[in-house]
Length: 287
Image 1: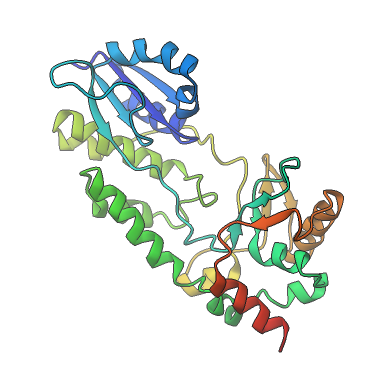
Image 2: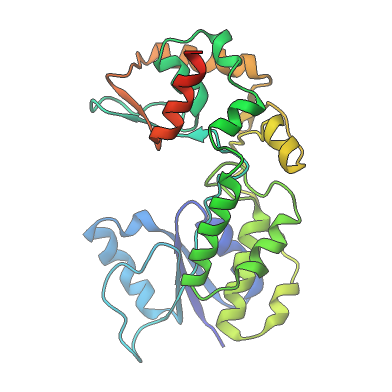
């Protein structure tokens, strides 16, 4: 019998821990965000709980003492899920001058590039089309990310096809690039349960995990949806409320936020703006 499980992960901690608790109702499941191990004080506070557990399950490594055979909890690694295939335009902006964090957290690569390079809102609107997305490599990201996730599953000794085949049948399985829907977290929990027990019947268990990551939802752009035959719309949700219900409103909203924060190429950078993407933008606007 498994008496206690410690699960450490990122923002996906609560969902996977909740699903595991449903699968092991008589087991104490501790969900501990990985940031609680970031300091020595946090590490010292949490390691006693870990030491008493039967299993330590983590997507973020195992901070602290090295595993010793026959001592401490059995360790199981699982992959946290980040997938850009539905939202290839979604990115982060980084402060380069040490100033305050840029808000909100999520940004459109196209809108941010346009703003930082002095394009009008109308000109940025013109960049949202299938031909431009193809030049930016947006339609290739699905297969690239799928291969990357498969590598992570292989490293953890977990069956990628069993995972991806299941979640893909549910359509859009991500709220954003790093916030999965519960169908993802539930399937990972089932696979962890099988790894703990060897009992494959766990894969058939129904779960009712609360969706704690759906407060912010980045849309699947219609051009992306048409390409992959997915439901799509230009509609942005933040903190549970619609903040933009059209592309034009979204562009205007971000331009206003960037102006208020006085963003410029001197104090702001677009994360993962690789040279090929930057060149595609420049070629388009200089035609």
